[in-house]
Image (cartoon, rainbow, N blue to C red):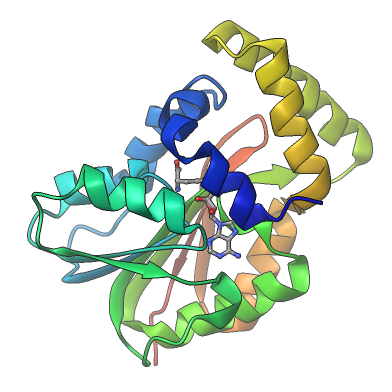
Length: 228
Ligand SMILES: C[S@@+](CC[C@H](N)C(=O)[O-])C[C@H]1O[C@@H](n2cnc3c(N)ncnc32)[C@H](O)[C@@H]1O
């Protein structure tokens, strides 16, 4: 079976086009990620987990042009697309790393962001990742991410998938594109119900957690580290 890394390696040059024809309300999702960052949080160090070709990284750059942004991804080829995209910016650094191997020092970041990437790791790994993110954030720091989630029942989940397909076709995905995403999803994706994300974030130490936006199966989860 093809690994997640090689899937995104071979998709890298086509990724930005394919994803914009696949995810409904993609730009609205990004808008909401940044809208709910507290006004008094002026992040100097931002980590983008699973940056891909840099779609969320670009939004971070627009909102916080003076911040140091760390763009992290497993796939060398997609990270290279990201590097080329921001070749004129010297405040972005690139890290080819697996979420499971994160090793930044404690309190490295004011803000950790991610978009449609964390569902690539299993639930037990998500729990570990949230603990690491809590440790890597400064007090007052925020972790906000958008991702595909699972319905709390199989019926809700199946209805989500069916609505998603309708929306993706309306956005210009072809049946072949859809099949390609579904094959990848069946092999590699671990969609988690929103309630389980919230519980794991609390268990990791975050004492303010919320769902700030949701459309079909895409949700934005928000968590703040108010204490050390
Ligand atoms: C669907 S793309 C999202 C890219 C970008 N954030 C966006 O919104 O367009 C998922 C990204 O997560 C990366 N990824 C998947 N599993 C990963 C892991 N275990 N560690 C680091 N990155 C991973 C993939 O290589 C891919 O670039």
